[in-house]
Picture 1 (cartoon, one colour):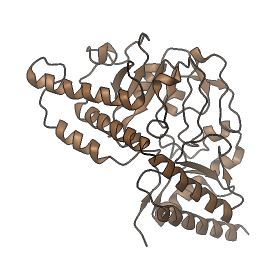
Picture 2 (spheres, one colour; picture 1 turned 180 degrees about the horizontal axis):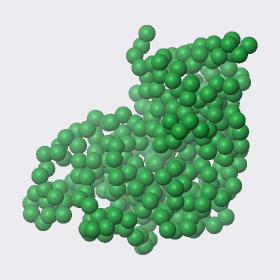
Picture 3 (cartoon, one colour; picture 1 turned 180 degrees about the vertical axis):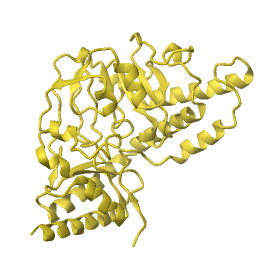
Picture 4 (tube, helix red, strand yellow; picture 1 turned 90 degrees about the horizontal axis):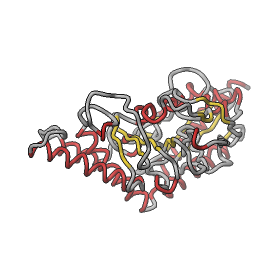
Length: 347
């Protein structure tokens, strides 16, 4: 028997050693980044180094990077009060600020009529489905795509984008809003002039340093083809499950997807039950977005895709670097054994 296997990378990625080292080093800095003395300038230099690292990894050279407490705060900063529309597949942090009136097809892709008034994610956290972004999108959630896909903010043609450090192996509690130069933005947190007046409050120097180091490491990993290897493992997983449980529905498989994400539904077997059974068997998976789990209702993303009652039976497996084929096969075998027991009881 092997140890536990973590298969919930879309919820959060393990902290990278590069990020840990950068954070430990940053803890020794005394100064406030807004102070003009030597100690303050040292802290400011670390923040600006991280800003350059994040911009380079995002392909956002020349854009503005506003550090926040995470993608959720960045979403509020970008979306609040703008009257944006979206499909009902956006992450809760974006959905809270938009009208979910745009049509979503059964492949999970959204039709956008007016990009300048629309928010559209690049990739979905639950299904992995990748959107074909039209130029001029007002707000793009790049959180799940960042580090997994070879894309750049400067290519996308959007006004603003959201990212989060902990999805790429950085620390939790830090993220960024990326803005095309010239975009007007009203601060939501006021009281200081930090982040070019866009976000008041002393910068989280330790977290930002970890974010910058993680972004640089994630960029190297992507260039080295690591996510193509992960896609191969994901395909092995899906083929194995499909061969042993032909009633299982693979969501979004007809559309382009993130290389690491598999969302599948088995009618009659609740997603929450699957998560608990796999947890007891030593595998961490989820029943949807981490921000929505535990709410005991079928995913609105899957319902928007027309999955109907089967949406309550969906789970998400998301892979990451360092996993081996034997890890994936151990999970598939454990899941298939549990599925066979469910079928035997039902029959």
